[in-house]
Length: 93
Length: 195
Image (tube, rainbow over all chains, first blue to last red; front, side, top):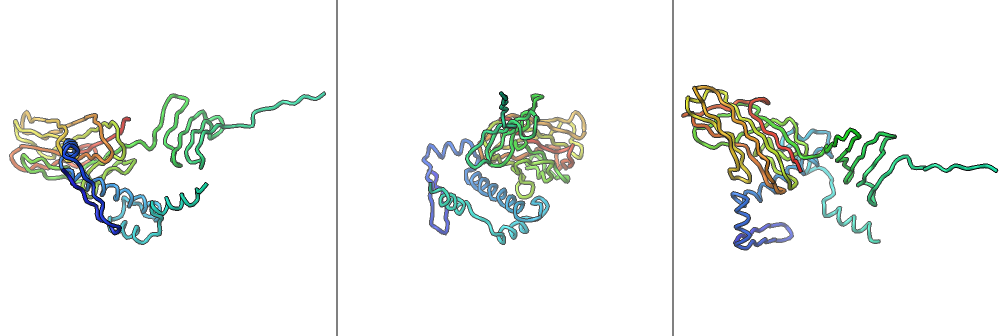
């Protein structure tokens, strides 16, 4: 069995895979832990680049990762949760 | 008695969603004879009257080795491909881990070329290898008929799920470390989503 635990400020989320599901995961990925980490870090990498492109005059492929993260940390942007809340508030019918 | 003629007021036709950012247009510009498809505000497809079809946002990436890289003898080693020609959907990381991570599931075609900067010993060889999700997927081998530099070329079509990743490896058995040759014509890969 494979257990994946995600710790957040709002609490932990656990994803349990059965032995069959784990076997299937290991069939397609050499090391499931690395696949999961790559999926998350790649998504974050692309999101950082999108934020930099949309919120600065910098080209994301011309500046360092630390400079990008500084831009992201200092910019005022709406999170996905905030967008969803706004959408639901605007579409009450 | 007078006569009236009524003509159609529509100069173009649009099928669109409620907020207007997803649509199919048949005449965005007068008589252009192009069908344009837009999703979420991004124009992703154009059909021309020539029969040519554009998919401007289709996943496609091309990159190459920016500087020579030393590869140890008989050791599968990931190529540190760090220079992009293009990367339409920003799926390749040329800085941290030299990985292509697919955004969308589908069938992809991959090509890679690896060239040595120095001769490989007579009878020895070099392999270009593709890894998928951290595991060997396919390779192509070149063998030296005499002491000479080698080039290995590999092309495969494969299915990727969203978040599957590809890495580009090389192996050689010259007997000691050899440099792989940098440059857009010498050591590179391309990935294109077919469907």
